[in-house]
Length: 181
Length: 126
Image 1 (cartoon, rainbow over the protein chains, first blue to last red):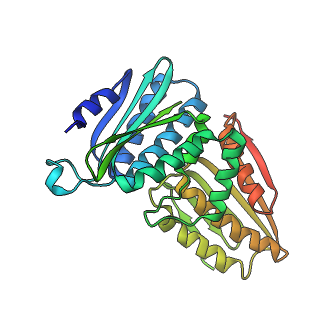
Image 2: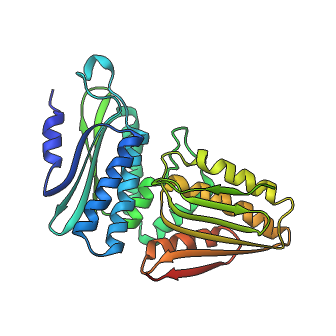
Image 3: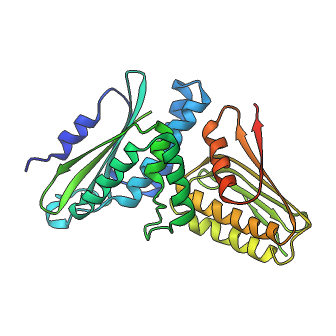
């Protein structure tokens, strides 16, 4: 197998790591992480607006994980935690980077790629219009996500959102999202 | 009509809806994973209130953070308020944002451009 989760995790732990996690993504975990990160940010950043931006993006990216993680089937997951996901918050060259990773069914990859490419290609004003359109016109998905998370992240970072897909097997890929703030 | 009074948590806002005074307030953080559950009773309350609203309804929204899951629910709240205004009642919306928080100011402007009630943008200086 070419994809190795530990190697991927190592690769994500770049820069000065503030917090790294690998395991089940639950609502309680997110609450705890947000608490920890908030008090950490209070120590390292003095500008309230920068803190707020990082916090906002962290909320969206963790909740995106929470809503969109696909579990690997039992026979191949080798005892991995259910609802498995990875995230790393680090500082690289004076910028903050949030990386998330999760398994995703291959049949969702194409649509997600197209969506990300579209979002990345839009200007600030176009993102604003798309956000307002989705806000006003689209219903919640059955997972509770509003379809706005990625657009919101792109708006707050001026489109500095990158992604990578690692093929895991015929049915699953590992989706990496890198956000620079 | 009973008022709503909910204390805030790390993921949900403080809410005070008072039919007797016509004051509707949401303050704090709104970042639950699933916002529909939290906002449903608020939207239902406004639906009931809209049958017999005060002449003047004053809305104070002062959010430090809100996630995109909440953003749709907040729009539902505003749409109920828009209906109250359409029925020829006065509705004043005060949108508070922290000094220099351009993102929060812009979020208010986004809502303002979707619903047909002008917002009063109020910058809060520490």
